[in-house]
Length: 169
Image 1 (cartoon, rainbow, N blue to C red):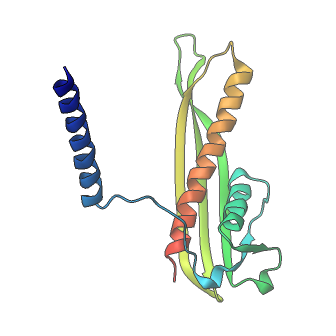
Image 2: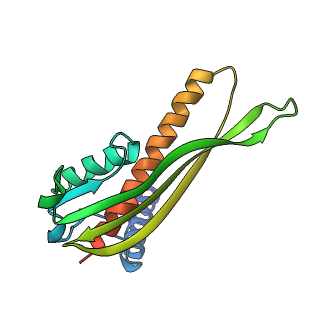
């Protein structure tokens, strides 16, 4: 029957309009681009190790965001000091045979931010972790999974740090 199909379409359309209205009413909006303070236009990242997943992703994200990351701290308007950058894993649970069944990959980061020679963001610590099931018959695959989790944790930390940087003035 044509009227039941039409009725179904009207109901679907009304449901879509209602859902859109609720999203708009609750304040939901997409994150969009980050606006960094002008002092960070030229930024120096002070770190002991320039090859960690966090450092590499932070540098790339800042460059993609329109900032110039310099290797000379004297020309930088802002300095991101990475005080501690550690990632590892630990056993979460073991089987009855005393072999690992589940691991937790964790990432710990401590950082601070200086702009114009003064500390604008005192030392902050971020800790993230994710767990994965271990299978001793798929060692290479599980090692790759752990590496992927580390990269994912580093990307999440970069997102958190860059959002905090965009709020500085």
